[in-house]
Length: 141
Image (tube, rainbow, N blue to C red; front, side):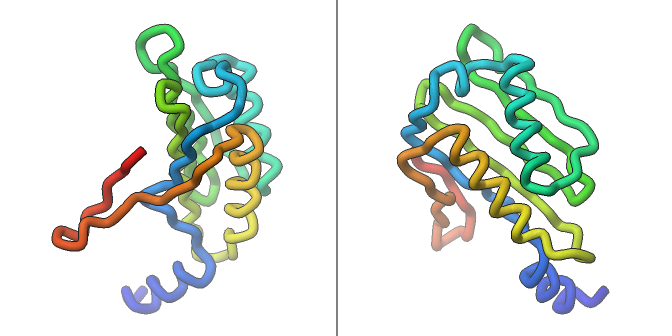
């Protein structure tokens, strides 16, 4: 596929948030940010399922140390989502990616982000800032 056609089609029907969405000031219970448990994984799996994405498998891995947060990965038929928590910052970074260009995934992605908002209850949402000199994106809390 011609790269210009691919980019145009990806913009129209794909949802690619390579740099993620950051939730700050999360007002969810502490165990939602620190709880690398089957209950937390089940809740995140349900959010993915309710969005309409088809999961092909998920895993939730705790960071070392008690209450240090976790990373959740869900492989989707359409691509993947990664959620990483930073309890000490009351923060979460979400990295959804839906790059199946044969269907419009925007509605599913919006439902996914809405579900994650309800789960983590952020007071602030941001995307990474861009360094205008290098073109690189960076995070600020």
